[in-house]
Amino acid sequence: MARRGWVAATLVTALALTGCTQTVSGQGRSERPDVTKVAGLDITTGESGAKPGVPDADLQVENADGGEMDRLAINALADVEEYWAEQLPARFGKEFEPVKRLVSYDSNGKGVEICRTNTAGVANAFYCSLDDSIAWDRGELLPMLDDAFGPMSVVTVLAHEMGHAIQYKLGDIGGINQATPSIIKEQQADCYAGNFFRWVAEGKAKHFRISTGPGLNQVLATMFFIRDAAGTSAEKQGAHGSAFDRVSAFQFGFAGDPSRCAEIDEAEIKARITQQKFDSQDQDTGQGKGNLKVDDKRSLDLLEESLHAAFKDAAATPPALSTSSSAECPDGGDTSPAAYCPATNSISIDLPDLVKIGTPPKRGQKGGIGDFAAFAEIASRFALSIQKATGYGLEGPAAGLRTACLTGAWAGTTTQSSARLRLSSGDLDEAVAELLADKSLIAADVNGTVVPSGFARVEAFRDGFYQGAGLCTRKYAG
Image (cartoon, rainbow, N blue to C red; front, side, top):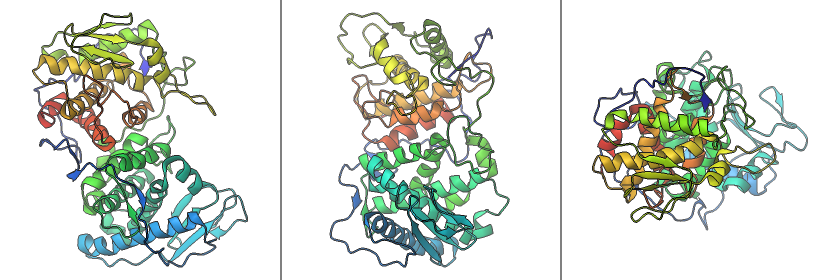
């Protein structure tokens, strides 16, 4: 997050809990969701990956080696093709024609000429409209994804590439042409991947299965991994999107159908894309550009100020924040790095744990996430005080989703140019990373019990970010 200098401490557009909100096309709906479900599907915790005992698909692939990565890729593409053979006629009245070329290569070995490119050293997967081909690196990229996130990460990447093929095959029907900015193409492809994964989650895929709990969490973690770097402009040619924006597009696809994805256009992108360049306010404090030292008193004071401003219309007494050891709380959980005590309406902060989360990793080293992830943990406990003051329960999944939504609403108020504590490039990606963590407080109740679905956590946060606090209490009333 960026800290502004001696600007008046005003946060405009602070939203009342019962006030009106501006609706952005394609965002969360106001009806109350079932907290036991993900986009209408039961939350499941079973196995994700290849279905046992299913014969491998038989697709013609150039330069394949018959190894594990190629088998995984071929089975994934066979299922994706089957999905689109069903959906393209049903949704767009157009017959699906399989991609003309499938090419496997090893980026560490001899290069293959494809799409006017030699693949030597190219650790990538891509679709090429010049010859209607999909290619993938079996030597470095696919094994790395599989090791880090499991086999469904490979399926995610290839489903995305097939999404580009669908754009090419639809042409004007999907609103895509040569002049279309890359961010629109990438958002559509992520959305089309979400369509496919809904089909998999419904048990319709031949070769793969996925749980809507841990399985989808891994898919979203993959989207985080393959995001654009913080500071990359969405207008840059080749921009794929931030993690927050990519996950949003995937979720729109998972919750909707392919026609929803084809609707993603320049107007929608301008309304909701959060990816931005760093600016002059994003100073490097030694924590990396755009990251404040979270244990600095001025940073914490600015955070508290921003929380007061964000919820000033809630008619609630703000909780007291303390970084010193506090007395045992009779009715609150012992959560870290921040804990809310309803009895005393206070938040205690564990600074060493806050620093662990708020210190971004250095290249090649393990570390935390970043300042926004740490500040959002505190904001989530502040959100509990708002819920208590307005008569909502503080335990259970509904409380966890309200907390995520209200934390998102606070984050939305920090986008204003007048904010003294202001959202900077990469901050929302830090939120995605923290929301997907097993012990994230951003979507946890007063006892630290986390909503089991990472998908639902991110969706609730996004609802608050785009539509404000008023939606949080309507949609997640419990």
